[in-house]
Image (cartoon, rainbow, N blue to C red; front, side, top):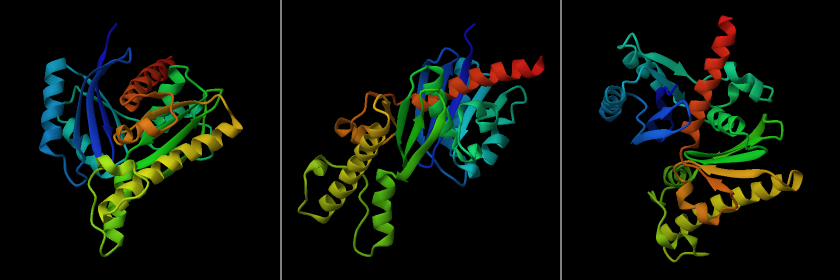
Length: 260
């Protein structure tokens, strides 16, 4: 039986709102800017419209922005028949093999679950967003650790905030893959983008020295800027959203066992 779901992936920079089904398909997706101190009208309108269009009764939410969670719960509780589920490590601990599983972000949990449930491991998932993260899933389908470092836009913003004369570069430009630039903006663009590429490829090469057959996945909003220069096997910009569907299917099975 096909079951349609409202999916929300709330990141520090952007929020993806989508409709998917329990077979892993993404039927529609809208991306809006994340606002941390209020629910933007664009988010409210999108949720209301999708619920009405697809007759949705459940929402699965991945959020790394606690400030929004409270506001979102209050908004969604306005429909008493609407089922709300936030991603939590507690129902999927069997897939997480680290000392403090509660530290793992909801988005990264979804990335891991997508790899595990589609049986595409051992794998490395590289998610290029506000932060760039690596998630390592071993040959047994267990998350064993990862890496976090500043993402592209975070690096641009940090140079603007922590220096007096360097301005904000808002996005990569065509000349970003030269080896050096002849304006300050080009210097910043090339430095930030190339450092991101070198760092990602460096980590991949180091990890492959230990285990050579890791399959490398790429996802995240900034991945399109650098994908041609990375040693990845597959890019899936809906990976986290599809991981939300995997989470739904797992907890449905988990809740069924608990009821019995």
